[in-house]
Amino acid sequence: MSAEEKRDATHAPEAARAESERLAALERDNSDLKDRLLRALAEMENLRRRTEREIQDTRAFSITKFASDMVGTADNLRRAIESAPNSEEGNAEHEAIAKAIQPLLDGVALTERELLKALEKHGVKRREPVGERFDPHRDQAMFEIPDESVPNGTVMQVVQVGYMIGERVLRPAMVGVSRGGPSRPANEAEAEKPAEAPRLETPRPNGPQEPPRPKFDKRA
Image (cartoon, rainbow, N blue to C red; front, side, top):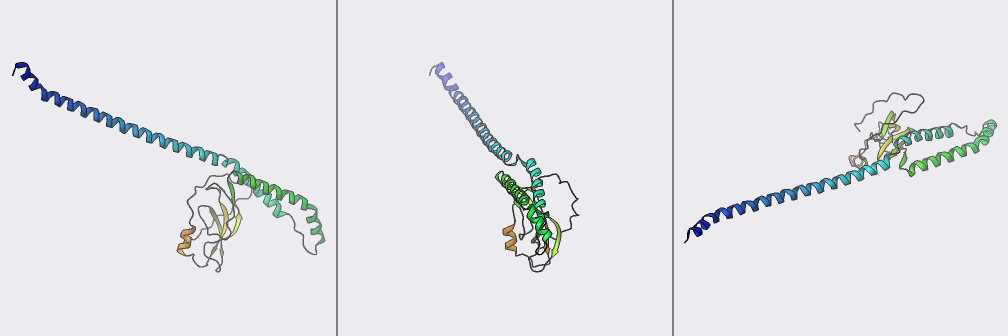
């Protein structure tokens, strides 16, 4: 064997080892680039979904402030209708007044219906939970009504109706809640338990201050 052949035989293992190391380094680089690409794709997909959710929320809740002001107008229309004198049998004066203002009342009632329709068209719904189980996430208990004939924690009276915008509380309903009746079955309470809806801060309407909020017994 010549000297050149001996030298080639000596360097052959070193060349093979160097080539193996080079291939291993290329595989590591390829794996690293593939991992970074997958992470980048995942981040872009998350960003796309998050942006879509934000756009949907913006479309759904962009009128929150405007709706908060308009529900006060709806309240005033309802107060105007309820404060009108009713005709009483045998009272000619009341009957004459009621007959005279009836066209005006019809116009106010029509305005109220159109306003509520417009609000509902934009996702704002009126909430009047009479007979339903008290929901502390959507209702505000103002007082308790002793009544043993209905299940404990039932909404018996609505002092001020509430409003929802989508699944969020625009304004909680102010209610009177029953006390002293039988407890609701556990399975019924679980079935009626609503999903948590965060409350939106809304300005208080002008007028008399609300009475102090009484303590409500939630043990039922």
